[in-house]
Length: 191
Image (tube, rainbow, N blue to C red; front, side, top):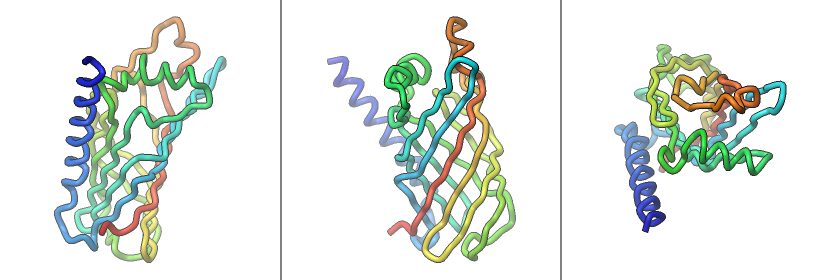
């Protein structure tokens, strides 16, 4: 019974996150670009052990008219070289059953026309939600507009402490508070 309730709860949270993600799609389909296989990775180096997780299943949307951007990712989709590390990530740190999704929703601040081909250095202001904690963030990145696709790339730091991810003192030397996060997505027009 417990597993069934957890599955139902997870499906409900995923449905709500998907609705929130697609709420940026309030204009014509020609201005909305989507990716379902965006890459999100994080890395931290410590003297004892490197932490290296990667997912290639984030859903990403960008609205070229409003310049709204959204990312949603299931926390259990991160893969680690070490299975025990992956288990600890989901059970002890991210508490993936309780907080199954991480997300970012923001808006490009520069006065640029994303319908024009080019490479743009951008600043995106928005809300980053990890481990149930919402944090206002300003994240820099690059948007490359080509005929038929848009490439989003960003590299930024996330602190475990900012999202109340507790690291027990016993393993504090193995896990750094700061994680180097990289995001890369190739989006195509949403049909």
